[in-house]
Every structure is written in C-alpha cells, then in structure tokens.
Length: 116
Image (cartoon, rainbow, N blue to C red):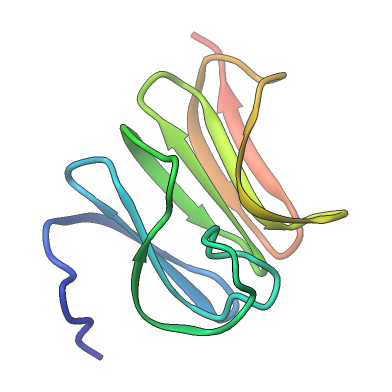
C-alpha cells in the first residue's frame, strides 16, 4: 500500500495495527489504529492519513510495540506513548535511563541498550 506524502523515510516500524515512519529530518509520522493512543496524536480513533507526532524532534530511532510506541532522540532521550499500565495520549520522556543507543518494543514491553 502506498502512503501519500510519505517520502524521505529512514526507518519504519509496525505494531499490532499501527505503523510508524521516521523521516530523515528527525520527525516521526504515524497511521493506523489509535485505540490505545499509540499514535501519540490524541483522539483515540483510527487514522488513515499520515500524521506527525507532535513534540518530537531530532529522533534517530523508532520502535512500535503491540499498543505503544517508542522514539529515541539524538541526545539519548527516550519518549514513549500509548498503552502501558495507563494510556498516555502524547509522548512523555523517560528520564531514569541515560546514554541509550538502541531501542526495541514488543507485545507489552520496551527494551533499551545503554552505556558507553
């Protein structure tokens, strides 16, 4: 399926029924189910057109879990949104892990690799 307006993509990731694309300019674009706010754009409804996740910049890696999403910024900051114990409708920073250089997301978990 061709997604109109999606160009300059450096990475993609797919969750249960939502998709993420990282553009070369460091922005994150999403579409698909938003039932658990996994798109990070509020609203809680399916999105068939591209939407940019607000509040994220200089992102270098993305990962989609089953019902949540994760982004890693070039400064090592991790942002996550969607369903965990609670539903988070917009990205929030995780500050207790530092020097992160890799992320992954699974069914109901997120993994990071940190250290120098």
